[in-house]
Image 1: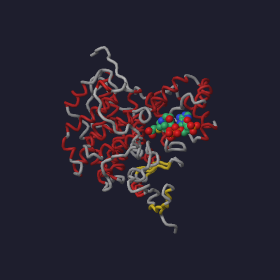
Image 2: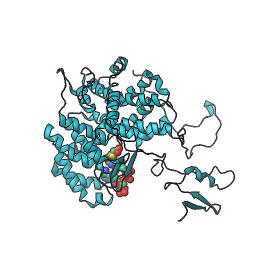
Image 3: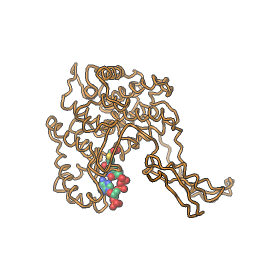
Image 4: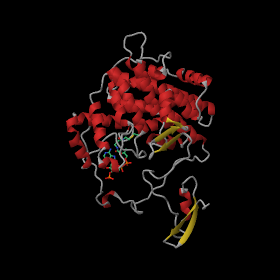
Length: 442
Ligand code: CMC
């Protein structure tokens, strides 16, 4: 068998280096051996978006983007969406195997027991402005939770990690619901632990004067499936943020707050909102050809299409498309569906999209469902964050337990000024940047 190595010839020196290949990777630190001279620091790999760099080994989620495969701990996401629940899937993602009945019951009980939040967290949330974005509230409140649970800093203690994991998965739904009620000016609805995880979430969102909220079983199940589909997605932007911040050995609330902040961005958790805005802008099926023409001319993107990893139909999008019809049977059809279906049909028959392997991604249909279920668009990324908390906690624990973990500290290519001496004010040249006084405002 050919040796698992690569030989690199440095044309600056004529020297050849043999580097080991492991799991289809070369260690970036091995490149340091390649030097142009004794003073040289050694070769560094340059990868600004880490698009060709593996930053860890993981056993949680597998994606084959060319084939459109997504598996959690080896289980195809299609099977989990059909047969599992979010809480069972969260157990799988975090612990590594599907639970037996006794373990699932204990896990469900342990999480459900933590759905209440401290009254001071509630008061803290009251302090946000009436129109605060619920995702901003979620980021701030998750970060603040580290002050309520100082034991969370014992990150190397298994029992502490377990408790924080249960707390985060339980309380993120309560905080998310309170953030929504806050933005609506409605009183908070306390958790109802008789209900399922998604059922209780719907109750905390939508219960008004009724004594007991009865979630519609179709919508409850649809939300559970959406939660399963969003539970993990290997080293995406927010999971990387969680691992990167967590590598400083900060408590998991701070790491998860950082992950939530990453998810807040429109290129990550905000794309499904962009899809709805795009469909509203198109307005009618008859306007689609013109819209496609503009996309092809580079005047904007077809939101909800394309993916860094999937070069095939995103497997989550397939499930969500089917689910949309079940939801619309209950809620009534989202009028934007016809535009979405026709848009997909036209795009998938168009060489521009086919040749670039641009297919619908998870966000193309999910916003339509959320909108039909009565969620405002500002809640869309929050709905993503709730289940992804399971993935973040699994990724975080894997990072904490990995003997190769060190604080994340990338390098840079410095292109700034060479050394210069501090000059007195009178002798300084005109600065390149400017700062002008503004009228004082409060
Ligand atoms: N509409 C039109 N053209 C596109 C699109 C699109 N949605 N996406 C990519 N392209 C074109 C792009 O113009 C480029 O063409 P060319 O080679 O002629 O310059 C080519 O396809 C490759 O694009 P890229 O920008 O290099 O691809 P990327 O891997 O950097 O970007 C992406 C991935 C998801 C940011 C991008 O496809 C996109 O902007 N999609 C729309 C936004 C969206 O739906 N985001 C949700 C992602 S799924 C959620 C998640 O998992 O977090």
